[in-house]
Image (cartoon, rainbow, N blue to C red; front, side):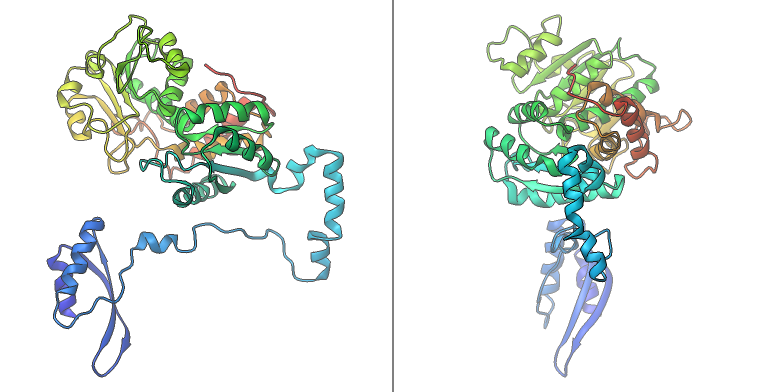
Amino acid sequence: MSLLTHAVENAGGVVTALDVTNAGHEKLRIDVTCAAKDTDHAQAIVDSLGAVEGVTIHKVSDRTFLMHLGGKIEMQSKVPLRNRDELSMAYTPGVARVSLAIARNPEDARRLTIKRNSVAVVTDGSAVLGLGNIGPAAALPVMEGKAALFKRFAGIDAWPICLDTQDVDEIVRTVQVIAPGFGGINLEDISAPRCFEVERRLRELLDIPVFHDDQHGTAIVVLAALTNALKVVRKEIEDVRIALAGAGAAGTAVLRLLLAAGARNVVVCDYLGAVHLGRDDLDDSLRWIAEHTNADGYAGDLRGAVKGADVFIGVSAPGILNADDIAAMAEGAVVFALANPEPEVSPDDAREHAAVVATGRSDYPNQINNVLSFPGVFRGLLDAQANGVTQEMLLAAAKALAAVVTSEELGPNYIIPSVFHPDVANAVAAAVRESAGGKARGFTEA
């Protein structure tokens, strides 16, 4: 077995366990568990083991894939079904009384069914993580993960709904007809501009909150982090110049919330450069951006927009800026490079010149992660039995999230709490619940 250990170590791996699972006169079956840096490194270890004389590789397992075997979530009954009496109450004939009560008063569904604590996580698989349009089946593991996060951080029962269509009418109609079983709808990984229309139409049709996490969840965390970053550099949001890269779902939502929070000087850039009223390619979304930003009509590229800016926020593409671009920003610059897994600018390069740097990655300080927002937001919405989401709720959530970081803790490397901070979900939920005031209707745009 020492030969196996040496083979793993020679490939740069670390053996964490060796277990003999079967033995005979001529053969041993051994489970080798080892740590690898990534999938390529794991393959190098497998190759090294396979090169040992007399060794045959029977099966290779990845612990991430093992975690996903059979899915990551399940349904469990909350009530015992041990005898005929309990069965008669949980199901027929007793359940008929509850159904009739809800038929007489539909609002009782929130009190007497899982609706009060259930969220549908809906995707069409068109914009999954950084993987693109990979379809509904490939999106299911991600939606399962989202459901697990709802349960872990806010005690909410969430159900993955992966739709085999990318037609707006079909998506809207499907969500509309399944909505009676849920207290909220979380739209997830639906590409722009389709996501805008899907959300708008569902908000008009449904009497439960509709929340597109890629838009509003991102916006809440960005505003919370920026609130604290500006405290670190002693600047006010009303006074700073902001360059924002990305005019899609996330970028537009971030922009709307920044404007609602008091930002006055913002230039938004997409892959063609600055968005301004003089461009002849403006769709409805880009026209709204042009009408509410870039008052000076800047028509150049992102690098020009970043020069002299106090804040850069990127929700776009990797490697579009370099260290020189960050060095050209204003003194005390704040850089949020949120493209994942590769940011718009190297975090190490950005940290040489900016006062505060945040990314979407977990291996750098100040991770901008939507898990900081959506569990608490939905906890507050469900508790308030809200009928919709308002801009005021989003602002309240961002303010509460920022406040989780105390003045004693606040610094360049700690502007946003960890997703595992015990106060995050409760603080956000309480703020949303208070803002909802019991019940809220509609969605107020910035």
